[in-house]
Length: 305
Image 1 (cartoon, rainbow, N blue to C red):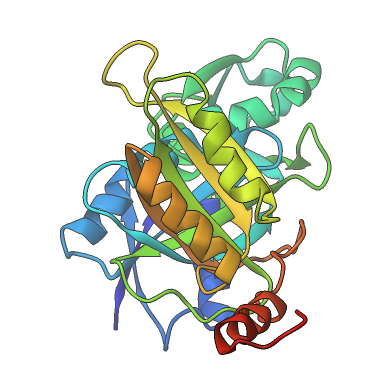
Image 2: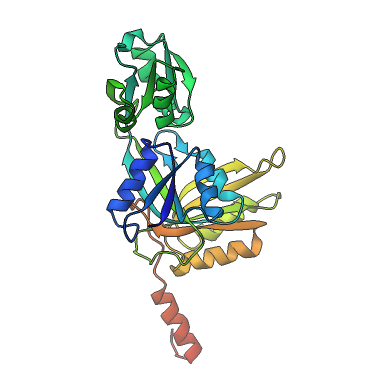
């Protein structure tokens, strides 16, 4: 039974995402779930050989990319994304038994969760001071430990710990979605499906036009970039790495050509993987067959092409 790490403790949305990946056949059979205290810790369990894979959140439709996950994947031995899944995210306010919502004066929350319910809290719990927790499930544990009277958490965590549900379906934005990915040791990418996502990390020379030239490798080949983000390298002021997602697969000729071109010019390129996308937003890369057939005819000496 493979060990799969996840951003825990038990009761987080990430554990729910792992369960969804299990149910949709991402693994050959049942797995042993291994909670980790952070996204980086989950990833490091894979690098250390203590887990066969890790499930971590990577992007929220409300708050954008999850920075700790991006940073964990950009440095250290390379890992590869093999699959993704999306979850609709709304929170449950759980509290110690006997307390009412209006009586809460300290509420525990993971920062990403707090950002997604801040307007709701301002309206419904204006007197509650925020206590920072390590995860959504850890926020519920902080209530049990006495650090807070209530928590922005999940129904699963509240049930596990015997807490009372004070409010359910809490979110500032309806239909909020978080995307989670399964990462593992480098290996051949899952087969091309025609509805795929490819992700890379770029570090470029600090010179005029370097970013524009990198983007041009995608644009001139008709490749649709669906996410462009910069993060500091943490090595000095003004130094950044760029995270790019595009529609397509490394086995698509246009994507492969772009990756080869970037490898020739970038200071560093890290391939994070090609895998089936849960949502097919964007335009697939152009097919290679017509151009390949034309080139083959040229090589054969066919006239009037």
